[in-house]
Length: 157
Image (cartoon, rainbow, N blue to C red; front, top):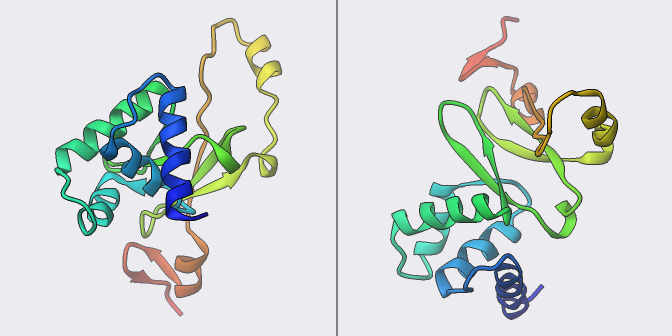
C-alpha cells in the first residue's frame, strides 16, 4: 500500500471512530497499521520523530485515546509496559497475542489458531462480558533457537 493510501485509510478509520483525523493521529495510526506486530509507544515515537516533529507525550496520549475508542488494542507486555496494535484490516475479527518472557517481544496470533466460542462463554457466565483479551506467555522461536532459559542466560549443555 502506498503512503498516500495508508494516510487516507488511517484518516477514514479515525473519522469512523468519531475522532478528528489530525496529522499526528494519522501518522500514529499509519505506523501501527503498517507494522506486522504490536508496537510499544516508544517504538512509534522513535519511528515517527525521524520524519515528523512530534512530542513523545503526544504519541502516548494519541495511543491512549485510540485504545479508549477501540481503534487499537492495548496489550500488556509485562513490567507495566504496553504494546498497541490496530483493530482493523487483517485483525478486524479479533485476535490474541503471544508475549515472549525472555526478550519481551509481542506477536499477534490469528484467532483461528485458538478457537474460542465467545457467545457460549458469555452465556455460561452469570456476568456481562464486554471484552475478552487473551495473551499467551512463553518463549518465542528466536529465543528458543538461541537456547536461552531466562533473559540472557543460556541453557546448560
